[in-house]
Length: 240
Image 1 (cartoon, one colour):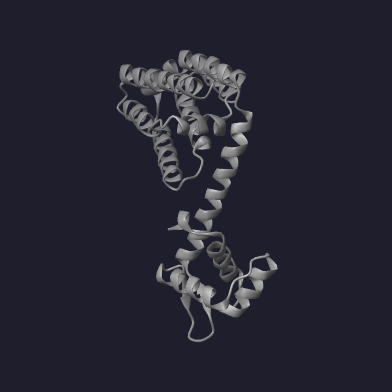
Image 2 (cartoon, one colour):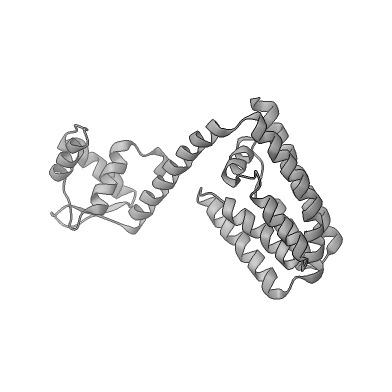
């Protein structure tokens, strides 16, 4: 429902949310006019009825409407959707063949390093470190379902593996590569464009580390990063 809301519906929802008391149609007419939107009280009434039917506002006798918890959540979702759309437009301006070429170079370097960090993490990870990895993946999954960026969780997951490897040199190398031409939101955008599944490979890596299966952890990480390289090349072929 949130993604189908028009400008007037969202503005009305925000006005109701910001009000410190129940608000009625006439007050909303004036508020919308201040935004350059002319609409009749009857139209406002129909919109309010629709919002009430969907559980976003509720009527307080004859005083007007107030926001509900579901309504507040709808505003947050709408704001996130606006931010995502804005970032998509911004990101597309920065993508070029030089960026894509650099992505592949960084991913190839990560492939060489992270196969070893995954193998060593499967050998050395403590229960506490494994719990951190799992918590990070759950946060990433939640953000993904809510349409939010998962880029930070992505880096945190790979960094936790590098840390659990017990090899400080490999950990330092990963940290350098993580931010070397690897603009995470841009990379996330590329993967979405080619419809690449996001969470499956991370969970496979995690399960192998949790079982302390070194061979499986190394192979799952190899497959994961190799697929990332394929995604970038696929994007390159589709759009350049």
